[in-house]
Image (tube, rainbow, N blue to C red; front, top):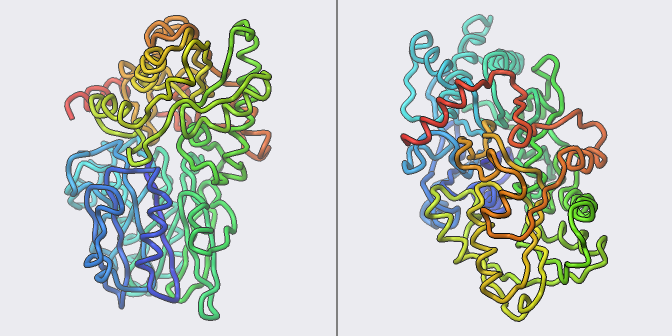
Length: 490
């Protein structure tokens, strides 16, 4: 679940790209990269680490130009330990292309074989993004080769290349790319699984355009949020600031990732017409109804969130139940998001570093803890132990998301069933695993209803980690087994 950002401006963009990446830092903490374009020359700097760690003053001085793209990485494929996997990636032909993407391809092996054996292109990393880049570069080259102006790229050539790519590539993706001498390209998968937004600003009497994973980037940089880029749509901005758009995929449909609204997106974001904060507040109301059905609410003394994502959920739940809302867990804001940290040992250690209980808030009370979701159970188990050690009598645990029972193959790092605490377990068994007295999960239908009611144009969702139904239609047990084996050997 990475973050992408790109813009064509009429002033230097290095600081804008850096500031935009800081806003998207929650989407990836493993690596970061920026590429700028100056006089048809790319300037690039990328490395492992947080944005503030990767970019120093000396790096920023070298990122010259009025256009560029940027990326924060959360590894779901490739080698998470290698800085070579950091994006954006570069291809020298045709024209020179830099490329970054958020999501995960599901036919990477097939595409890699095609790129190597048919296109005679070399892929130097294990990243599906580099494979993706080479597929696009080949298709762009094909368009130019058959053009009556083979040394000049036309807008139609770019959109036709995107259409050919979307016919071959399966999975989830939101792409930003820069073509040397021409401009900024962005496009989205035909199901709209991964988010992508378009914004603009007036600079020196001219219009600057930007694309980003979340619209919150725009207000930070004094840009205006225009709209979400549609599923299957491509957007191209020339270096002089002319905007071109085209639908490049037949039968495109809006089926965004449901987990974006539950956990990943910033609360102040609006994704595909849905205000994330409002969606989470409404999740709290729906979850309160499930709590009423599942237990005697007279046992609950106090409702507490597990900060930060679940705060609006817990507040609305407490109000709906007529119970006191209190904050008993203090978050260390200098620790990253534990769910997206690689490695079980790292995640477990970070839970204790990230959250610290206030014993007086728990002493002698029956506490309803509210979280956005329970995935591996590592965080939940550690928190329950801390709360119980702080003097709580009973601990009830409520999740705003349903049980996560299936791997996600579209950009969220939960590739094996063995990692998922809900795999093969009932809610009662999960409660025992995390040492809670009761464990309550949101119903999938209620969660989908809550989000869709904020934008009825949403046709459905990628809910695969809850339902086991995969939108791209190419995921079977053999695929999941191979994915699990590759994860174990990584």
